[in-house]
Amino acid sequence: MKTLILIDVQNDFMPGGALAVPGGNEIVPLINKLQEKFDLVIATQDWHPNAHASFASSHKNTKEFDMIKLDGLDQVLWPDHCVQNTQGAAFHPDLETAAIEAIFRKGTNPKIDSYSGFYDNAHLKSTGLTGYLKDKGAKELYFIGLAAEYCVYFSIKDAISEGFETILIEDGTRALNNQDFENARLDILRKGGKIITSKELNF
Image 1 (tube, rainbow, N blue to C red):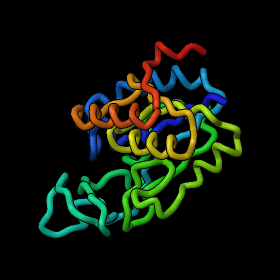
Image 2: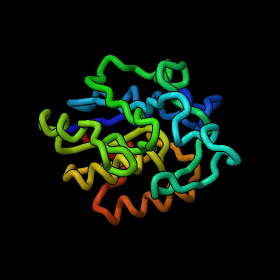
Image 3: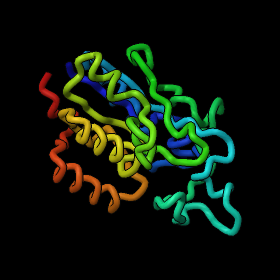
Image 4: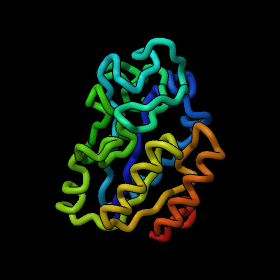
């Protein structure tokens, strides 16, 4: 079963949002076009409580994009973003959602960040995505969404570790930092993932 996983296609990651990914809005028409090609479409959603530990505003004497240690893990301090039940946490208004069968929310623990759609950053808690996909018979996962070198990359790493055939649709993602994404690309390939463009989808 060919499965499309939409990572965090949310307003706060779009131009004008709290944590804007350059060109993030450009992928929405492609995502809408591709959904009909897949047997299963699911989505993830960053869903932070107020005063999340990953927010710079939660730490004194820090600024946005500083790096700190949070319970032993490297943590980028982000602008407040994707706070539960805010407009910023909502999906982009142009995203077609009728085909999305399930939404997996992440980042709900106020003390730990969660880039991946599968686990929090310390791998302490699963979102249940692996079990859901295996129950559906999904084996081939295609990833698209935001941001390329964070939530997309970490989701792909976990998908590979969980034993799925894992493919990034590169023209369906955008990065905060292109050099960091280049490093992530190399790591995906090293780990056995594949990277294609949407034109290479031959089904």
